[in-house]
Length: 82
Image 1 (cartoon, rainbow, N blue to C red):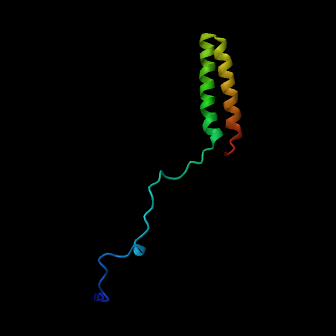
Image 2: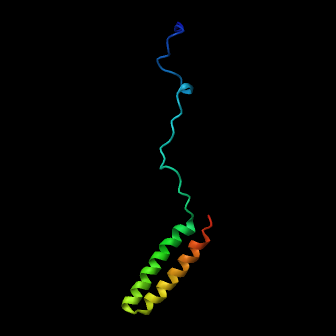
């Protein structure tokens, strides 16, 4: 096989000369910790249950709302990465 002239490029360049393709990603990581991702929804659910307790006066809503609210606040406040 004859060599190509100096000024001519290869038709099929080798794999090593190709630019590296990056894998598709979803942008920069948000780095949200597990306690925050579980604690914040618990706070929201706790507030909703306490609001339902005000409206209905049910003891179950008070207990469940306060437990969810306290657990969510404690988880959200720690914010440690797991």
